[in-house]
Image (tube, rainbow, N blue to C red):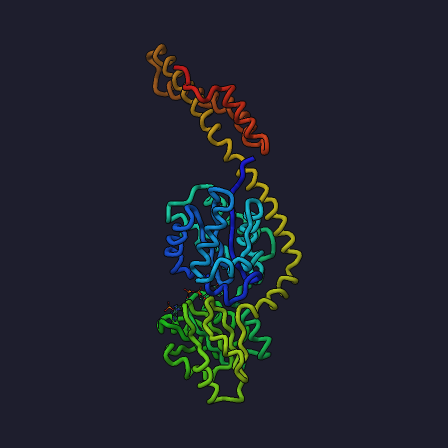
Length: 424
Ligand SMILES: NC(=O)c1ccc[n+]([C@@H]2O[C@H](COP(=O)([O-])OP(=O)(O)OC[C@H]3O[C@@H](n4cnc5c(N)ncnc54)[C@H](OP(=O)(O)O)[C@@H]3O)[C@@H](O)[C@H]2O)c1
């Protein structure tokens, strides 16, 4: 049986604290450069990095080589020693790696089970890897298969119902803390994909006072306008903090946006009025020390886990149905993988049969002079059909014999003398 040699090494929200995850986070903009540096460690690797996971998928050249190279890459990137990082990493190989990827693409491994964003992120990881032109078809096909599985799970189960996302769960958390959003001033920091989702979810939950701030003022204004809110320049963040009840921060900045000093200054103007700060950025936007401040309630991605577990319980039935689909697709994938081993034999068989057909047809056509084009095309089509029909069952048999296909391949090679050229 052909060993798959697929390996995934990674961290996610359930294995690794945010302080480590944020050091491994790779933003969309950083992905091409990160793939280049991955290639210094490993010849074939695909990087999947989302707000809650960073994973390296690879094909082992020798047992364990992909794993070691991936650990090297991750520890270099995070500037953490191998020994320090290893306890946080999960490693899955072959069938377990395939199952993991299919679960990830289906949203089953997400913090917010069934979230939609992950499918786009898996697609992006594949597209960026394809651009490197360094990845062999088996690994690329595995990702394509994962995308099909993700779509199938969403079509055939209710796992993605209600369009939940990390952003909507953050707004959910804010609602739980303050009770009602209607009379609260909500400050959204960051007007990208996540900021837009946060603002929309807040509006849906009844928020009427939404203020958006972002590095690009235009983007902030556009989002605020679309939701009937207002925007402020990022340089006026301190001012905006003085009147906000809830801040949800989600920029792509590699550094802190809301530090303790900024929040202390804002709180000094409203010491008795509580401020809820929800940081869903990775790397984090808010300095962790803010948690110790009086009347400031800071929540980060790890704090969202509890709410997401609640969603998970509500979706238990759908998760089971989704897992059945994943299991069936894993079995299909393994069967396909086995066919890779017989592919060279199948190609050689088809080549030899085609060479014989062509040679025999040429001889016949030489004897049958004066045929019309139509008659020649009919002969061509008929001989092709004969060869195709004769080879259909042997090829199917070769591909479908799982564990024994190595033996079948040897027998076919011997029977058809595939190492020798076709007689002319
Ligand atoms: N997308 C999601 O589903 C999702 C879910 C949960 C959490 N998150 C987290 O949310 C954050 C943003 O993700 P996204 O998908 O919204 O990214 P995005 O669409 O690329 O938007 C990033 C936002 O951050 C701003 N930004 C980038 N670099 C900055 C810097 N150095 N200083 C200040 N602002 C900066 C951008 O401003 P410009 O407009 O000027 O570029 C933009 O408003 C990430 O940390 C991500 O992990 C994302």
